[in-house]
Image (cartoon, rainbow over all chains, first blue to last red; front, side, top):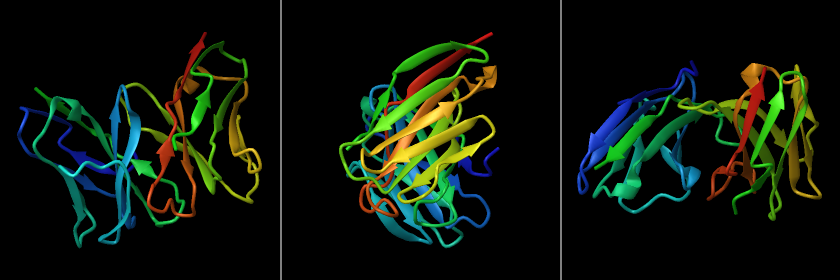
Length: 113
Length: 113
């Protein structure tokens, strides 16, 4: 158990819909990262927040957005869902913003039908 | 730029050694190694920083050749619990900058009794 929690564990929805994934970092961690893992694309970095501010942006689609709240939990919003968005979405957290160990949560498996 | 991992897969008998390589065409600041078992979250193994020392604990160690932008993960006297997919993640700049952590496609390691 890494100490990072993610909800829900599984999510099944239809194309065109919008979903919100939630992540609570380890106690004391200020950085939160979001990753997407699919069979064809592998593990892809989406976005990072540090203490409420966006820190780095990777291969995140415009249909996706994220935020980190004052209590440091983070949410990833996915809208206008497409079949190709089906994937495992991981949240990770670390203490520092620079080159630090990232602890991954158990992931949310999103299935778009 | 996604790092290239080799081999793609390897099958060993318990007690044998393995080497997994990770290379990039870009100048790297750090290399991160993770192991992921099927259906589970990636688990941190170690970070190697530019100018840092070779890391290791117990029977897993790694090196980072800054001149060649290559890192290798060494698994000595492999155990059944070492089975899984190994990912290297690379940072081109301290803190990842705009690109965050970029992962390779992974190396599948199967340890047989």
